[in-house]
Length: 226
Image (cartoon, rainbow, N blue to C red; front, side, top):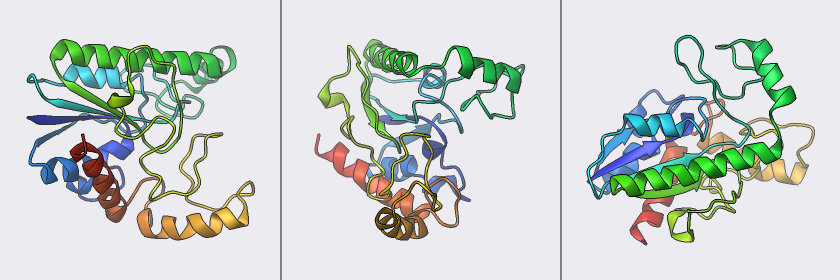
């Protein structure tokens, strides 16, 4: 059996000097399964469809889909690179990005697009005879999916699997909070700050090796209870 991992920079293991310390590899190794990681930094939920096309499955394999923040989408540039957070991504034409956010980006469209993408991923898994599991990475969003069932979520859709290493979840700007900001209450920062020091530092927006270890333990527990 092979574990196939899809998602963004958290799944990829960004800011880790040794990518084998990222949680997809730790989970796969602990459960004695081959690990295939297709994650792309700064990517989106929709981009997982492109990641999925690269995978070679055997019936009975498991696919893990890490759901990143809902404000991300993607377009192609001349090198077929992904663009996420289109308003400030330096890899593509910023004037076009701004037009996207001005004329096409709405909450309703985001949620509909992501729900449809998640349903497609489950349908593709069924076609490939692959078991799919979904989980929110570092923000909390629920989507009106037609095909996803409660059993498809490793961590419930009203939660995110990084809750053990993060106290503050920024669902307004969809960013990982690693520094104090004006809108954060002192009591919340007093809880969050030690977690940042322990599980993120010296990284900017991604878990350090200790953070990935905690994340791997949570997923291992979720998988082995199935």
